[in-house]
Length: 71
Image (cartoon, rainbow, N blue to C red; front, side, top):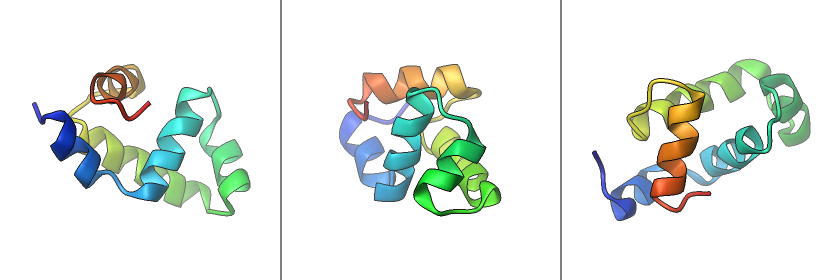
């Protein structure tokens, strides 16, 4: 698993925004409207975050994000 510094370096500013909104319980549709993105773009960001944090699902993604101080 990546260390904190590596994870922070690989997560883009927009991915961090999406991650924070996911943690707040927002749906992809809500996030897309708030950030003026398409739902598909938000879904792509979520997939990228999952991959970068080496998580299998949203719960794992949020847990890992807390471990590396992204949330």
